[in-house]
Image 1 (cartoon, rainbow over the protein chains, first blue to last red):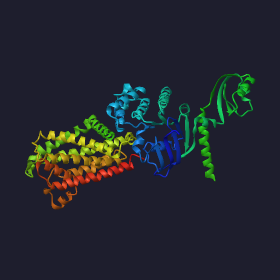
Image 2: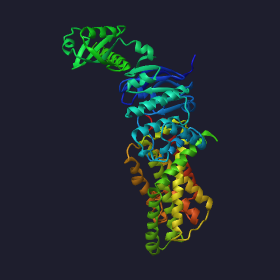
Image 3: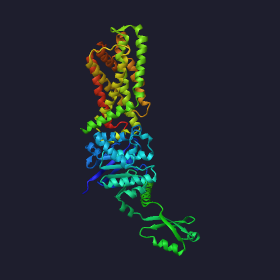
Image 4: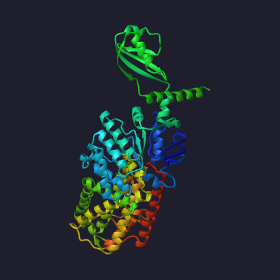
Length: 315
Length: 255
């Protein structure tokens, strides 16, 4: 059996104001995995990761990192963990290179080794030229990459990425995806939270969905996507606007001139769609999914959970 | 090298680098302020006051002024540095790392002591322009100044743990530390006070530090040396344990 990089048992958190952020969640992430923890705002993602990172005190439950219990073997557990938080949390008056070397020092790494590790990650993340600059002079994207380098400088086995690409332009985001994929291939376990679901779909092998402090799904991406019952496609076409508008099938929706949306049920295939269009004499110029598959499933699952709660409240 | 020692060293170096980087805010102002004290109380007003405990007035106040600068700077260094880390959330860098609480606390204390000693040294050198310094007992001078800097670094640390806004880190220095320092025998001997005020002065911990330090320099003190050491060490132990407890509970740094 593969060792768990992260094992959470019965984790609960009740804040001082009475909010139950976590209601006894269980979660296990295997070594080497690229795992996504998804959920809407206020679902409990950051609380979970905050407890794992020792930034939040838990109310009850157990957490272990690479087999080390966070309560009884705290130092070993922390040594194996790297955290990239959502918000910038470094001293902006420090120099980029100093931030990394200082962080390595907190992990007991001698200055020379720390400097070598800092060089490795600053180069890998395109920040080497900025090493002597104060962090406040960096752009938003550079600050994000600095936090990634800082989280890796002590070579942790488990890396937590809490919305690492928030506010980053698409080109840079793709570069960061490649970097994460590379370090995951090299053996680092990664746990990612993100609101960009295409990011989770592109990078992760296993996914957990959390909402209102409970885990709704925890399975492989493949199994999760298999639960998707229908997908919506957007087609751009030439000619046949009037004929398409008169189609009685409610799955077809004419959005604007020369653009139509069609809902395809699971197992249905796209052949029938093209046959219909051919029959109407419409020429298709392009086809694309309306939204990413994980996004559709996410909305479906979280929406179902909200509906169940509403019914419970009524009863 | 031991990992904990490296972590301690890292915190200390970071702290020293911080106050040296902003020397115009940390090292220069106390030098100017204390020089003004020397000029006004030592050269202008001092000769009219006459002698105190057998010494010129400026000789009498120099130990108190050195101690005052050590106290305020040790406190200010820790309270501002630790609170700034909380404010910028960079304290999370330390919280996620495997640094034991006693190492964090010791690192910040050492940073506060370093600034306190730095400023103390600057003030001592400046005082040589105004008077001759006696050294009655070097061991007492060094031990008292270090213990005092430790004590007020601890005070600054506790203040920073509880502080939630910048106002909170200036309340204690303004309304507690400054009055206690001025009334702690820096500028006068408590022998000059009526009996009631003499007895009231004895509850001021700064009185013990100033007098013990003055004993180290001049060989005169209003307070027995043993009592002064006992008081200072006692306060250090109590505040150290309390600060560790706050760190363990994560007061102000963990939800």
